[in-house]
Each structure stands twice: as structure tokens, then as C-alpha cells.
Image (cartoon, rainbow, N blue to C red; front, side, top):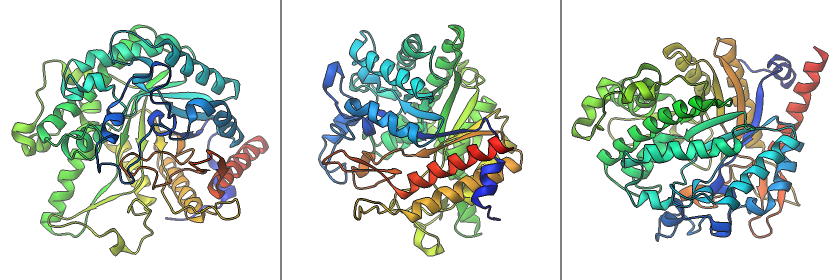
Length: 450
């Protein structure tokens, strides 16, 4: 892939391109029992022995619930024009249905108003995994009734925030919620049954379509979409078995979600593969799922390499590997975006998460994360290459604003461009944050000169 200089990159992105940072409620807010917030499935999951690598939980996290004003000031100083955040469903509706929690709703109103006051476009995600435990007690995403509860939640949030947010994403990474949460059991709620997982995946998609329709019916003016975690699936060798495995995994990760959203059908080869574990689909479900959306959010971190037998050693390729044991593979982002553009009628794509976890020692009050700077540079170049090939890409957001609770990894993995001292809660800009800030300032300068 040809490399672009910083100046060339600055000059070539359109003036209305969205630049941002992203977070999620459970990972940064803390205050998990404050002001009427109910328990989520992640509160319950974290309490199970051995499921979180360092034995921690999200009860304190980054104390964003108390420190939100300073955090918004920090975001604004980076020079981004957008902040992607999520609402904690159990904070605003503790049981996932019925009564609303006014203190929780007030918090998000203050947060959104604070973004607007700082010139930040609010990009809201309704569901970033922290389902109210009360709904999980009724079967969670495997219970079809949850689709109606999600619509009620979406409409409630629109009533309070819909006149001020620029964008609403229904779900973040339904593959993760369904497969890691209900099939592999390594994420909340910790269930290990493939059939239940596929029901959950179907209901996540169905609730998405139902919510989009309901929001449009009440005149929602925000752009509506969904966020998927996608990556190219490469076979480790050219053997027939490895190629077949790559096709199968692509079906479960990419086509299982993209096909219903844009073709109103599940891929037949995956239905055949699932057999009795394929989810029950009622008449009209697929048309609802395929309700047109304004944008598709893509979370990209690396490619996936598979073998029919055994596992692929990520260190065997000689590529740089992050702390999550993910290859640094920016060309995969270009490959993915071009493929999506060619295979599906997506009107607008948005990179809603992209970043890497690296060892980030604090040395004399500074964090010199050259590996993350390099990661961001090469992936922004990859975004540009995709746009040159006609991909309708409207923006890019770094994951994450700051170090936070990284789910089953606890606090052991740091994705932030801002360092968080978890004892003092002090925030420190890493070199990657300074690079991103300077890059955006240079881009703005180049646009003014154009």
C-alpha cells in the first residue's frame, strides 16, 4: 500500500468528514449503583469468579459519571467534531421496561447539552452490551419479547434526546453480544449454547429494524444505523479445507449480519451449517430487519486468519501484534470497506471504532506510544485508500478516548489515546492523542487554505 505523508492526508479528506473519539457507558461511567441505576448483565457477570482477567469490575471505571464535564473539555481540545457515546439502559430504565429513572435521563441530557456547547456532534449508541439484568432474567436477547422492550427504550431516549443528537445507532456489535455472550460464554451473560446464541442474533437484528421503523414514525431527524464488528477472513493456506473454513467464518461474522440488513435473507450456507440451531424466523421478520438505514457503522481492529485444523499463530506472519494478540493489518480495513461497497448497497459508511491496545508505561509524566501513533496513521491512510476507490465513507472515530474497563480483560489492556491513572483518575494525553490533535489541526488549516 503506498504511503501518504501527513500533509497529503490533511489535504485530501473532505471538509465535512466526521472525526471523533468513541467510548461506551459501562466501560467509563462507574457509579453503577448511583442515582437509581439498576444492575446490568455486566455487573452480574463481573461478580462471577474467574471471568474477568484481573478480577475487577466496572463499578468505578473512569468515574466519568462524576467527571463528565472535564472529559468533554478534554475531547473538545483534541479538535474532533464528534463524540460517540452510549447510554446505559439500566441507568435510565432500571428494569428494562416500565418506570424511567429521571436522574439517569437528566445525566444524559446534561451530557448531550455539554457536547453541543463544546461544538461536538453527539453520536448516540443505544445498546453497547449493558442489558438490564431484569430483562436477562426473562431470557435476554433470546426472548423475542425483548424486541418490543428495545423499541420502547429507543422511543424513550428519542423523546429526551432525539432533538439534539446527530446520529443514533441501535446496537453495537451484535455478533459480540450473541456469539461471545450466548455461544462462547466468555462475555456477559455467560451462556454457552449455539442455538440460543443464534436466536439472540436474530432478535438483535429484528429489534434494530423495529426500532428504526418506530423512530421514523415519530419523526426522528437523527441519522439512524447500526454498528457491526467486521473484518476480512483469510485462509491460512490455499488448501481446500482452509478456504472452506474461511468462507464459513465469513458467513458467520460478515454475511450473517450484512445479508439480512441489505438483502432481507440469511445466507443459505450458514443456515445449512447451523441446522437445528438456526433461529426461528416469523413472516415479515426479514423485511423489518432490512428497513433502510442512513449509515452503517464499522468497528475494525484486525483481519482474521483461520485454519480448518488447529489455530493460526498470529506471531507467525512477522507482523506487529497488539496486546490483544491481534495483528496490525491496516490493509484489511481497505479490503473490508471496498468489499462492503461492492457487495451491498450501503449509502454511507462510518468507522465507529478503530484502535489498538499497547503497553503504555507512564515515564516522567508522559506516555510515548509510538506503536499506537503508527497504528492510527496507517489506518487513516487505509480509510483514504478506500475512499479513493469510491467507498462512501463519511467519518472515522478512534477507540478509545481513554483507557477504561476492557470487558473480560479488566483494566489490563489499554486502548485509550488518553492515559488514565486508575488510582487518582488523572487523565494524561498520550503521544497518540497529541498526534491526532495535531493532525486534525493541520487538516483544518489545509482546508482553510484550499
